[in-house]
Image 1: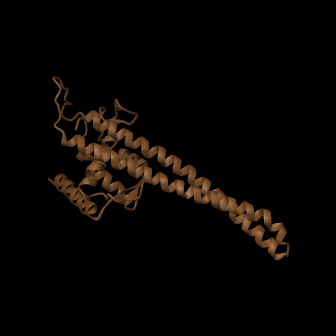
Image 2: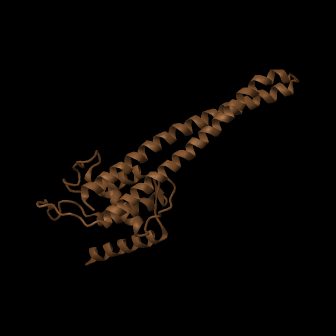
Image 3: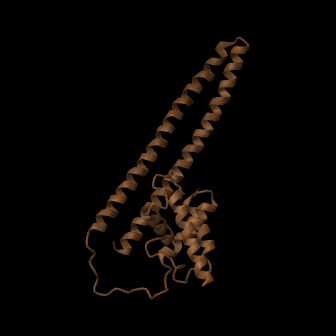
Length: 221
């Protein structure tokens, strides 16, 4: 697949992920607030019954019923958001597969990066796996990418630190995400992780140990 198309698809998926994450955060905050109000109303209603004044509990009961209906709606919205994310993700995956199956048309002139200008994607593999292990096996993409960057700060080139033409990500940040996709397709990261998490698999842990041992052997030679 053409690199520009890959970058565009990656940018679209990242934007979808970010916006849905923000929307989820808003809905969860609203849900928490309404549940707290319901809890307070329950205490008021119980107190009214304790003092034998059931009429005084009428209005709090109505408000409690209204809030409970709103909570149900919010929970449905939350489920709809997850369904939307999964649907969009599936659409992007199908589009990527369709594009991969088509033969690439080569332009007449194509600038090739000089050897060593960009860090190869496979170079990111051990750092991604190492960060996930240090984070207990899983982590949010934002924090995983940040920590990978910290560990590779002496390895990344000037070219790696340039911005993509198609978005605001730096080239190395984008390559971390594509490297993560490579690891997932190879079974080293789980493909059924909860939304918004990167999670290492058991085979990923073994693969990391293999990479680490190979690196140690190379240093000793």
